[in-house]
Image 1 (cartoon, rainbow, N blue to C red):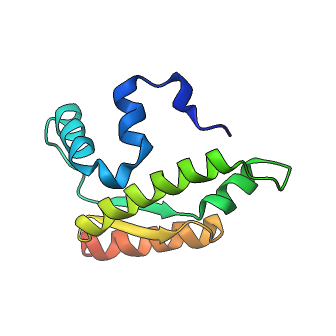
Image 2 (image 1 turned 60 degrees about the vertical axis):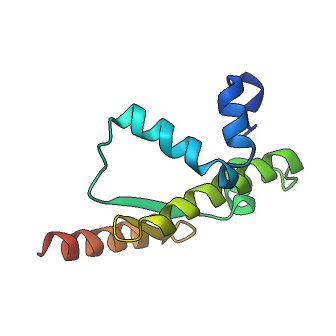
Length: 114
C-alpha cells in the first residue's frame, strides 16, 4: 500500500503532509464539501500504522515513507475524535471484526436509547 501523495493535487499534498498542523484547512474543506452537515455518530477504527501495513502486505518490511504518512493521517483523525468526543467514538481497530461489531452495536443501542 503506497501513500498516494505523488498523484494528489498540491493542496491535498500540503494538508496530508502533516494533518495535525492543518486542522483548520481540513475543517474548512469539510464544511464546504458537507455543507455543514454532520452525522450524529461516527466510528473511528483506530489501528497502529505498523499493524495496518503488515496486514496489507505479505512482507514484514515497512517503508519509512508509508509509515510516516499513515502515522500523520492517524494523528489527524485522533485529533478530530478528541475535538468531538460526544459524536466520534474511537474503537480499537486491532480487535477482531466480531468484537468491533458488538462494540458498535452496544454504543448504538445506548445512543438510540434501546
